[in-house]
Image (cartoon, rainbow, N blue to C red):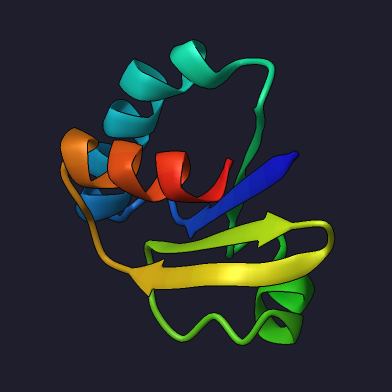
Length: 87
């Protein structure tokens, strides 16, 4: 199963935009993708451990291994392509 973790913050407008994209596309992947959104201000130790230097940062993991990491926003089509490549 593919696990996607988005690291963001409540004050971050790009994080808000990316969350809307994720909310739009993830229901189609409900059995193949696990998704988690983490607020770096609330989970600062985890963010530090994961080497989060800016928000939003998205990490894709498969079988416990990081297979993709990007910072910033992407369109729904770009994210669908990335998910399809890794599921």
